[in-house]
Amino acid sequence: ADTIILSTSDLYVNEALSKNKKASDHPELAAWMKLVNRNAPIWAVGRVSDRVKQGLVRVTDGQIKAGPTAFVGSADLTDGAKLELAAVMANPDDAKQLESQIKAQLAMLVMVAQAKSLGPLVQKVKLAVEGNAVRIRADLAMDDVNHVLSMLDGGAPPPQDSPPANPPANPPPPIPSPGSAAGSGSSGSSQ
Image (tube, rainbow, N blue to C red; front, side, top):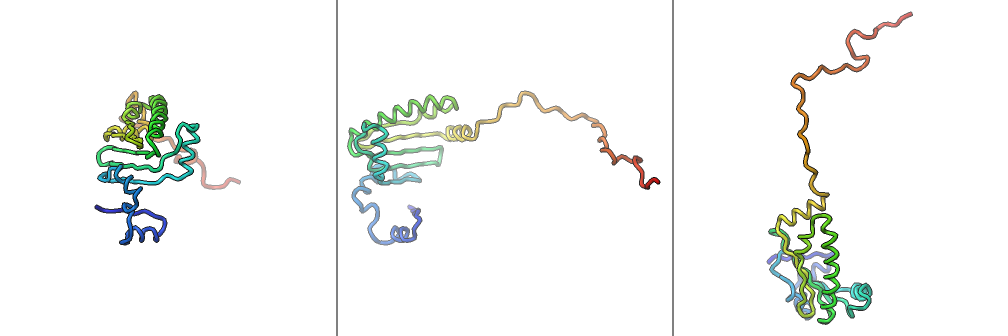
C-alpha cells in the first residue's frame, strides 16, 4: 500500500520514513487503529488534546465526565461518499451520553436541512455506540453528493418561463450616432 505522510517538519517526515518505531508500535495508537477502516482510501487516527476534552465536558454542563481520548475516521469517495467518524470515549457511560447529545443535534439539523431540501440526506447519517466508541456513519450515493454540492452552490437556476425572443428576419439598419452621418457638418471654418 502507498503511504502519504504530511507534516510541516522535514524531521517528522524523515522519522516516519525511518526504520525506527512506527505509530502501530504505540499501544494506544495500535488499539485505535483497530477501530478504523484501514482499507478505505483515506483514514486517520488521532489523540484528542486536553483543551478539546475539557471543552466537551464544559459544553455538556458536565453530563459527559471526560472528553474523548481519540478520534478515528475514514472516507471513501470512489463512488459517492462513505464517511465514518468515531469518538473514542474514556468509558461506555460517556459514550452513551455523547450519543444522546449528538442525537439531539441531528434532530435539529434535520429540521434546518429541510429548508434546503437536504432532510433526507441528513437522515442517512447513522449513529451507533460500540463499547466506548461513538460512531457516526454516512453512506451517500453520487446523486446525494451532487445534490449537496448543488445546494452549497446556491441551487440550480430557476427554469426559464418563456423562450428567448427570436431576432427579426430583417433587422433595421443601425442608427448613426450624432456627427458620424455622411454630409453633416463642415470641414472649413467660417469667418
